[in-house]
Length: 310
Image 1 (cartoon, rainbow, N blue to C red):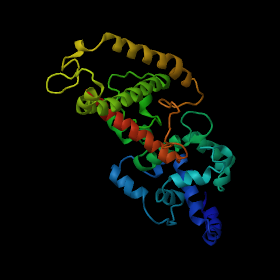
Image 2: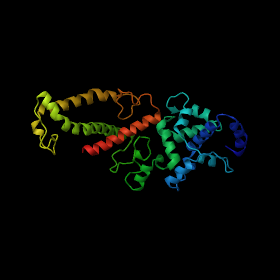
Image 3: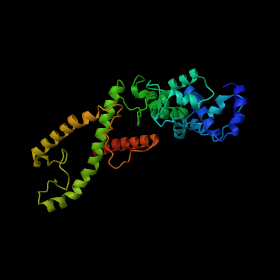
Image 4: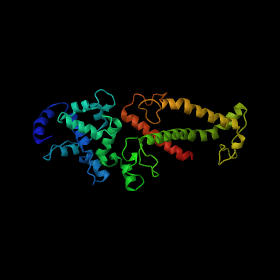
């Protein structure tokens, strides 16, 4: 944008009912072109956040940079640009939305936000841009990853250094993940163990509380050890359980893993941990923002459960 375009364009925008939407599109242009305009690297996160959430859009003499610095990206803006509701912003959608830029400029903006190089900006990549608006470009706007890099707990070459994976805290001190494929494998394992830990965190105390009632009702022997504790390596009592039970559990889980889960994992564009299991419809039909929030909650509760059950 040059000053002449601004002087001729904005009177008509003020007369339009879509003024705020157009200004937010300008914010998207600036964010994709250079998130440093929103959040100078020298500022503290609290100061950058305050600057990003200024309420008014004021036109000043120094041109678009000042205007961009006083706006911020929102999930609603993503929905407005994604007119075909595909969950991605492509070149044509961005070109139609950002009226003041040439085709070459818009193509450069797509490349700026397109982290995986598929030619479009999906919601995780857009969320990355929102974070960059607040925290700056470094580490894709991820404040936790930036701290891990500064403390030497994460290698700069790690795929965690700049990715859109939900729940990325930059925690890989041993450098186990070498690329995105390995990272997806580790995330799959993390989610699986987290889910098992959440079930165990409920089942362990439930077994100790409810076992006396079930054994009495079924006439079965009480396998709880002294003090009413569940048999375990620390509590003892595992020798009283029939080995056939353990063999059956191992055989069943092996069958599920090889014959069911491995086929599910072959689905195209599948996210780690997505088994298509949602009988209550808690995930289906939700917005991209809500889905990311649900994924983060499951991950964090799973991590907590793994610590608790240990």
